[in-house]
Every structure is written in structure tokens, then in C-alpha cells.
Length: 203
Image 1 (spheres, rainbow, N blue to C red):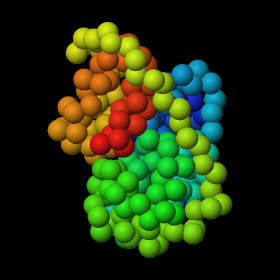
Image 2: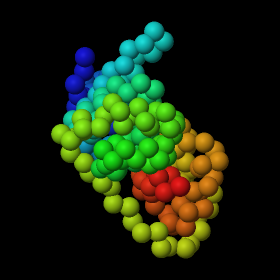
Image 3: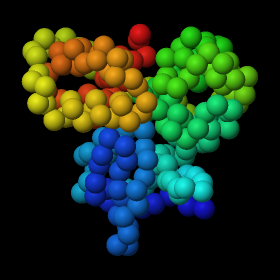
Image 4: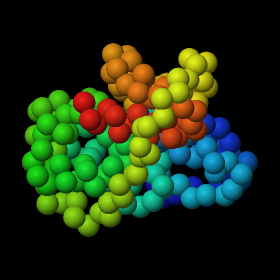
């Protein structure tokens, strides 16, 4: 079983990144691929978890051990698979997630794609009191005060919307927040995606 991979990110898509080490490119599914956009020229470490099934061997990647441990806790819950766990973690508001579980806030948990009321209740039942050892890191989102409109040809925004779709958000949900994202002005894909995920949690 792999623990981590040390190498360079050579490709980024809405669904995964490719990390090259010793001449081999590893396809790694991550919650927010564009968080690695500024790191393509440097060697970095990504912690990984391998899921082996009949039709696929998939690597899931994390920036640190706390992220990996949170992922492992999530997939231990009945009804949450690796893809759902990545979507839950994509907002990087791990503090909010843990607080919701500890306070039994099922309404907050159902805001994540693929999490219904039953799964949210199962998350509370299985994980309450078991996440205290994990560090939390809230991601600061810039205030949305700019009013300039961005053309639909904005590549960074297009990539961010594709990444939302890859995480499991519906076309209706994505269309609902797109105007708010356009008000932000031109940003990097990672910034658009972070803001988009924050907006999704405010519905």
C-alpha cells in the first residue's frame, strides 16, 4: 500500500492530477485539483490512499496526513464512498465539517453532494467524538464585492464549473451560483472553486 508520492504535478484536470516520479505518471483523484496549479514546477509530497476494485485501481490524494485520516474516517461511514468523501472534503472547511458532526447538525451535512438525511445521520452516529484528534483548517474566502462581469469564455471559471460537476453537484446547483462567481472578476481556477464551494454551503 502506498503512503505518499514525492514528485511533480504534470497535468491538472477537473477530475484528477497526474504526478510524475521516477519517470512514472500517477493519476490521483483529489478534491480540488486546481489547488496544485501553482506547484507544477516544484517537487511536492502528496499522501495517497489506494482503492482496489474489480474494474479499477484508484489513488486518492491529500495534502497532509490529517486530510488523509479524515478521508478514511468518512469512507468508514455506510453510504459514503471515496468519491463522496472527496466531494465532502473539497471545500476544505474541515472545521465546519467536524463541528457539524459534533453538534449533530444534519442539515449542514446534507448540503454536501450525495449526502441525504439518512447518510448525514449515519455520519453523526459513526463519527461523533472520533474526530477530535484531527487538526482543522478553515479556508478564508475573499469578500465578494467586485461587480464586474466576466465573459463566459473565462477559462478559469469554466474549469472551476467543470470541477464542481466532477464533484457531483448538479447542473441546477452550478447554474444557481454561476452569476455570483462571475461577479468576482477574473481569478485563478483554484480561487473560483474555493468560492464556489463556499457558496454551495450557504444554500
